Amino acid sequence: MNEELDSQLSAMFDDELPTEECELLARRLSRDEALKARWGRYAVVGAVIRAERGVRLNAPLAGRVNAAISAEPTLGAAAAAVRSAAHTGVRWWQPLAGAAMAAGVAAASVLWLRAQAPAVPLLSAQRAASTVAVPLLKASTGLMDPSYVTPRAPAVRPMLVPSTQLANYVVAHSMVSSPVAGRNLLSAFISSESPPPAPEDVRVNVAGNAK
Amino acid sequence: MSADASDLSLVRRVQRGDKGAFDALVLKYQHKLVKLVMRYVRNPAEAEDIAQEAFIKAYRALPQFRGDSAFYTWLYRIAINTAKNAVVSRDRSPIEYDLDRHSDESYDMQGRMKDPETPEGLVLTDEIRSTVNAAIDALPEDLRTAIVLRELEGLSYEEIATAMDCPVGTVRSRIFRAREAIDKRLREVFEGGLGRAEELG
Image 1 (cartoon, helix red, strand yellow):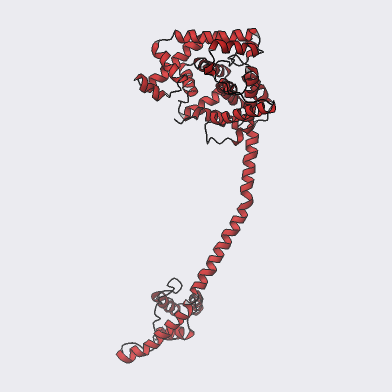
Image 2: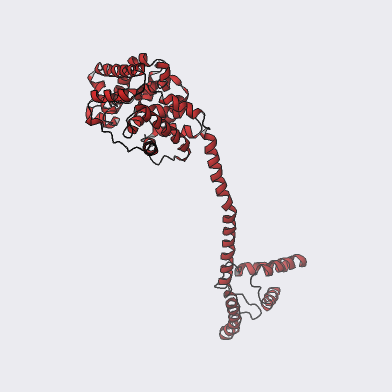
């Protein structure tokens, strides 16, 4: 027999073999009867050194247990059944967890939208304030064209309202493109805004660009 | 390297359906378990029956063993409970058998009187014992010290290396060589396989 293998067996018997080597040797040990017999004799040597009096060293115990275990069902199948049961146990709550997550997302969305709702009148108020401010500015400085009102970028909800430059670009583009495409672009732009801009503002802008 | 890695690798194999791996665990622990059970019952044959029952219980419960404790610790608890139940079911009081209170000679006489084993079986046990003892006596000093520190004192290789002032690899080699020398003599007695005693007796 391979001396290195026997040396490993001796170390494994003493729990002094690295885990990876144990895995390999355990596989061989379970199948190789000669190796198993040597393993058993190592146990006898230990029993004699420890002077385990009264213990029969040639007892048929291992053979009897072996015979009894042979009549038992294989554990792999039982373990698989346990794993399967555990897996099934996990499965039943998975749809519930999914539903709970979906409900949570929906609730969070509703709460977020509600939290944003007061911003709409605020935005309108800001727009009104800006349009009111224009004549005041014109009156005080006389620098601005009265036919063109640049909508001021709102301080709140910057994500929902496009930037001023983008608004100007879209309006200008709609004027130079074909009337149908222009309408489409304009309507798309208007519909993408939330809340929709006051019709007066758009008319004023278009009129301003036309000039 | 992790403590109990050897047992755990065998246990995992049994849990995957490899019954041969359980055989290796039985061979390794059968003597320890019988000795343990003999704290509760004096008769070696009865102790073997209880140990057998404990091993079978352990096999059936093995799917639930997760390796949180050492395999032998787990097996130990099963054996103790099995022994206690056996004693209770036979309406006896457990007997704490202190081996140290008896000399080897008086114990041998007591054991022989109660042991239903055949005279051939007793002779074989004695032969095994004397063969191993003779082989140990014949070992060089360093090999004998290493194997005795391991088996009798239960020291780890690292602790033995410290005690003997040598590398761990040397300890592993010495213990292996000691076992090989003893096993060479023992094989002659055990030819035919250990634990299948009916063949031997």
